[in-house]
Length: 493
Image (cartoon, rainbow, N blue to C red; front, side, top):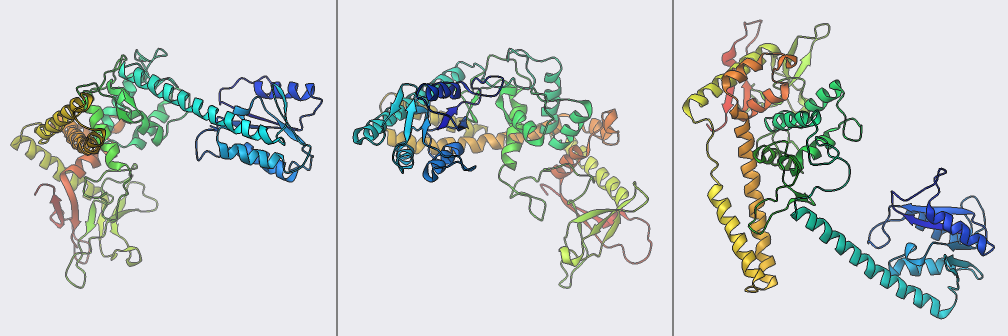
């Protein structure tokens, strides 16, 4: 007989890896004078959800249809703990009955004993049992949803693995991890790339709460979780109270809400986007998805004129010279790769001049404008929030129908999400302006080990100031480097 078990991922097992259900199945088979020839397990696979493939269940049906296991061993039946561990969908139960009864004389048994699936009324009773099991499964899921919603609305932390940055109680901060996460959040909001942070953590031996090495995905998920600013989220959405304000959790926050909103805006801006040939994802400020080795890759562009008089405009790529690790040039790609191969410019000098251009522009803007400009969408955000509150009160009082409420609430919530993303992007830019230009200039030329800006942070400031830099031809011969041949295209000009 085949012993089939569907168990959860944390189900009890003995020292040989045998689950409790299989041990019961073995005893049942022995009591009935039968021998178990195979044990099939679907680990942590729901039997009630559509679209879930249970590999062992399918293997069992295949063995019943052929009458043999893949190694040729004959199969005469199936033993399970009880029927609701076998199938909770009518279609699956009917498939099982058809496969088992494909030949006469086969045995089906559970903990209570044999069941004759060849009898006319037994299959009907089994389908009734499946229906009741499915109803119970739905009730359990609803209870679990209400339970998690209630915990979220009370500001209680979610279960699962201990979150990085907090102690085992999930409420107080870990004295070592929390400062690391706070610095990473602020650096990421200020423009530093995930890979740069990960490389630093790997160098310092920083591990996740499970002891694994960090990856871009794991760090992005950690930073994008509203938990780090003290807000409670559920299924990726911020849980709010009756007034539409975020629920504040009972744990200690690591960063302020403005920093997290800046992070959330960056993550949402990158989600589902790809960087095009011009280096920009759509109509938003281009961001670096990985750590660059060169400061101006994709920012400097070829200014050599084509036959029609327009510039080539191909992005210049860095080319390092053999035998000299410090020397490189920015060059236009060959025609086969979309360029014209007509521009080659000294890399370190180009980096230096463009850096000075950007720092000078930042200093100019700092003198001409206030440190932080107010976000222009605050009034609309308050209006939309008020409309949502009014709509919710009318619906709860029975003044409007369900159809009217849900048709309008989705539209308002969509606009609310857009406005909060814009607010987050504004906060991200403000975070980069919090530090004075004098400090930026000083850190620009320091080594990273001495507190200097890394290349991703520098590129963030350059991207914020410039659309691109057009590199014009220098003519023939070995002329002195001429910074006037660098034509910047500033933002907001």
